[in-house]
Image 1 (cartoon, rainbow, N blue to C red):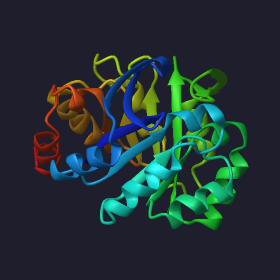
Image 2 (tube, rainbow, N blue to C red):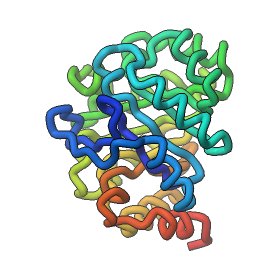
Image 3 (cartoon, one colour):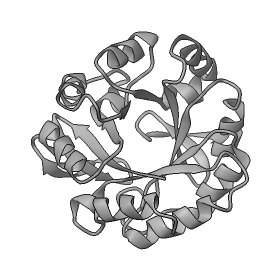
Length: 248
């Protein structure tokens, strides 16, 4: 199981939000490229980047920084989300050296776009499902749809999606622990591997998630994204990844 550090970009800075609210941003670094190198040195096997400005604008905004990170660390797999709503945006990022693109809002509003993207860029598409009380939110979490995460995951089952990043918005940035029940429920019913996100606060959350991953009958839980916990020193990335690499 992967422990994936997050770099959330807002106005060129590395920040963390609380429950997706842009006005509640904590700045952790003015140098996202340097921060990416820091997590690589701590054993990161993949990096999760979100263009927060792009998520609200509907088009990439911090693409220059993402490109710089990919260029600086070409052997570090990167997954990028935020404002990716066209095939041109996907091509741009993949050409820049990013390994995977995350389609969020467009996946909810136009599921056929995911099917098309998977056909044009096989093996490169991840879907991001961000939920409030089980219902999927879009447009930088500003709007909540009537579709559940499980319904959407099932819709994408035969498209060729590499993974689903599942975020419980109520837990994101709150350091209250992951919503294990809903994450496991989605993993049980999905034929696509799940990457858990939102609320991981300590090693015990990783331990619980790995234990739960062993019991799922679906495609399973392949990783967990962590942000505030590693930035505030509540979770040691190297220790967490070492635990996940072991047999425990």
